[in-house]
Image 1 (cartoon, one colour):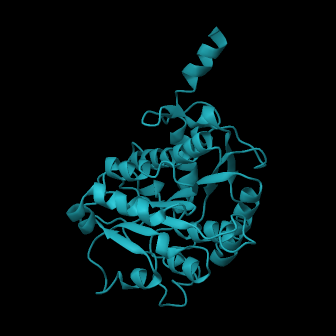
Image 2: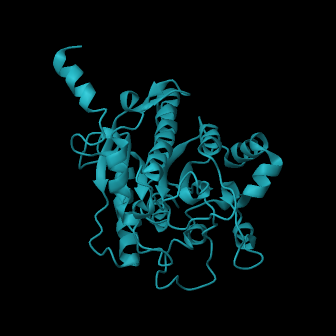
Image 3: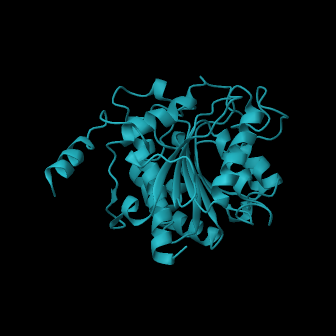
Length: 331
């Protein structure tokens, strides 16, 4: 290695050096020829119950991910060397304060990216972005994927609250996306799992709607009672060969692990990073078509930016799953 390459390697280890992109991936404007597109979705108007700072999430992860570890030790490869990974920047949201217009912008954007042949790993943004992304890529034969997807939904909350017409003004909101995607035919709930739900609910029967929609639900209590191996086996069998979209709300993690989230659940113990990593890595070989990490609240994070670091680590796991499938299964 020559001196110039040595110098570059040294400074790229510094999070404060250079132009920030997600994991230092090259920034490109077109998805053509990209295998995995890293995308920021700075959207906060779908969750009006908390401070609306989730739109700062993509910028925070771009800063911290410059020094994120990119070699996946368990899979034994570096996705950035194995496939073409690029940062497409942020979804343009000129009507940022208008939730409905922003959701449609997100859908249109991801439709274009998937039709170009890329798979996506995104950083939000509130959890409403998942509705925009999935309705843009999955559904009937006219959708980019040409079929419904299964969801692996990590969260402390079900986000299936569709008994109201809107959530403080937002119709396709962070509170109901898991319901309307089933109603619209974008998600096959019979193949999907919601996992990590915990805490005292606002009313009894808070899981009933998820079961009515067809989801299986793994609360933290159930996870602890049945054990990781049994839960993982159930998830693998339920998803089968269905195209899989992974959505990861950081509030499924314990508050000591991820304090900078928008709907923190501090009253009961949540997942550790090792626990969610074990579940994610068990999806190896599945047809993971995309994923997102949501509800990062950088303005509530610790000075060490630990929640942003965790968000980057989860993104890395999803990137590795998609890259591994492409390399080893020739997708």
